[in-house]
Image (cartoon, rainbow, N blue to C red; front, side):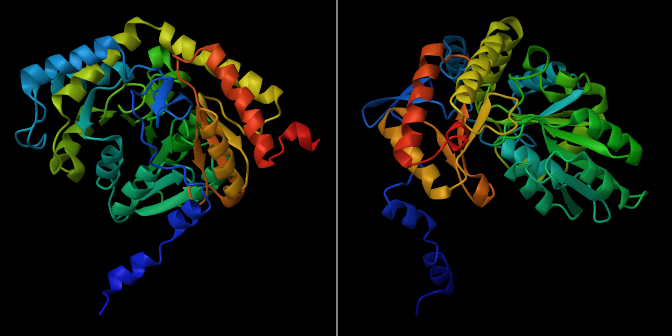
Length: 401
């Protein structure tokens, strides 16, 4: 007799349906480093789908630092931070990160996803509230689901809706507003000044996930709170190392008391192996570069502004983006896959984002910039985007007018 689990899993055909149409765009194997140009199936492809915003993943100083750390410490720690997995360089990085984002202390986790799982699942209790933006990252949503607290969602960046929902909550309850600094698909920045005012009004704490903000906005790329001059008004700042910081892992920065609590309550820290030494050394080297070479952030924004200018001139629908994450809306799942296929064939890598990741009428191409892109590469990508839209029968805003 066939087991019930097998019957359930066999009903999943989403990926198979896309493959049957010849449009499957996921798990594309890259045969080279994560640079502005990559090799896929022997073909040169321009990479506009990476989160390496500063283009540091192949930086020689970072690679050398990682190699030296492996020579000294080996390839792994064989245990959790809580037990045998704390190295002196873990502590060094925590101190550096706390200074970088302007907080008293920091705590490392093995991934950014684990930060949000571990922290959000344990900082509030059964009679408390976690209030999130409806477009917050999946790791925030999953961390809230693991909590015993009540979850409240408000409309994306809608401060009136946030105000209304906060006003309905019990005054005596613990309340934490949890937001992305830069939203990972839409590319817009959280309305932090307004959130600070609302949080003060209702006695709420603020948690900002700076996964896509570090290395992008704020003084020396130190994130959203710095960008708005509100570091002292934000209680918790989290981030990941897999984007601008050219490595793997994550952290939370806050006051010393909260960090001490998390060391003994965050299960994804206590029961997961700690960051490998090579990864820790990579982040330390990346911080050195970011703090001493501001030209990387400056070039990222130069590239972003240039790409935005060209895309808008061609009539693409970009939504409210304010960052190097540029959503190019197609608003049709199949056509989004088709445009992606044409671009891949023409040597341009972008990420299709379709439902259920976004609403079905908001499917898009996630076009992201790196500091190491050249203007010539951006021009080539935009020209090929125009060509791919026409081949797929997708009209731009300019063509619809």
